[in-house]
Image (tube, rainbow, N blue to C red; front, side, top):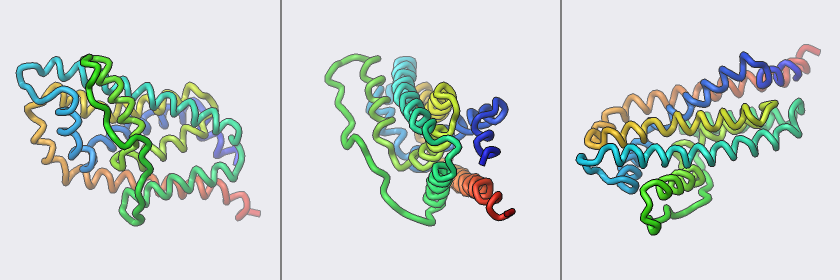
Length: 232
């Protein structure tokens, strides 16, 4: 069990988890589900005007900052909660189970609805081009759409096993950056949004691959938990 804990505490491994968190956000952003929501989100925040692409770009940057703030807070909560249980094989078992379930959901082996904290996106009643996208980004992070939740839940599970709160915060922040790149890019290329549908087929394969990787990671953690028992 000690070797399993070291996976989440050594400096070398934490860099791998940082990269995985960013990649996880990037993959969730190009899923068919996310791509289908992209025009709605861009239109809701900044419209599709080709005359003001810079304005839309700035609004999308603030949108991503809003998601980053919320995800960073979530990362801190995961780490503070997990620090109580680090080194506990039962906690590692729960983490591995969560990752396995999310991998199976991505592969559509099992189906269930993810909980939604906020049911409705707030309207722009404050007439502010910066605060409103920031708030909307925070709301988007709390909505927990089925598009990103399986990967997000897995990263949160990893973050909960981090020995440092700062590492968990960075992991979730990098996830938000990876997830937000597609929004920033779309904000700059608003006239090219329709071409997003061309990525649907490729993104489906990428999502399936990420599901397989999550399952393999969960199997590895299960192995680390039970191998000492099997050896005896």
